[in-house]
Image (cartoon, rainbow, N blue to C red; front, side, top):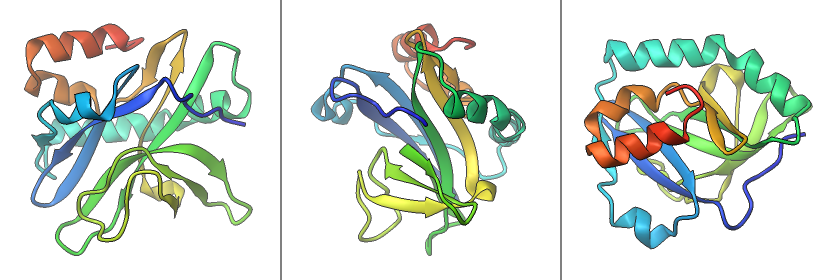
Length: 175
C-alpha cells in the first residue's frame, strides 16, 4: 500500500492554468503554505500544447512503474501521488495532484486533493475524491528523496524563474 507524505512534507503547489485545462506541478519539501503563496501560483499552459500532451502520454504509458512501487514500495520509496483530471463547467477540466491514493473495489481510485482546486466550487485542499484510471494524467513518488515520474512538471520548468526551475530539477531523479 502506498505511503503518504508526512507532516514535515508540505505540498507547495504551483498550479498551471489555461482557459481550457488546468495542469499542476508540485514541489515537495519542508515548505509552508505561506511560502508557497509567496510564489507565482499560476503558469499558463494551452490545452493543445504538444509538449504537455506528450508529457501526459509518457506519464500514462509509464503508469506500471507507479503501480509496481505503490503495490510493493521499497523502503526508499514514499509519497505516492497521482494527478487526475476533473471536469469543470468553465473549461475542459482541472488537473490536480492527489495524495493518499487508494484502489477501490469497483476498479476506481480515491485520494485527497494535494492542492486547492481552482475551478471546482465547494472543493478544497484535502477533500477526498474518487476518479478512474482514464482520468490519470501523471504520477510521482519519492525515491531516496528524489521525485520519480512527474512528467508534466518537465515542460513547465522552462516557464519558471531559473532558480526555482533549477531547484526543482535538482529534486527530480530524471529531470
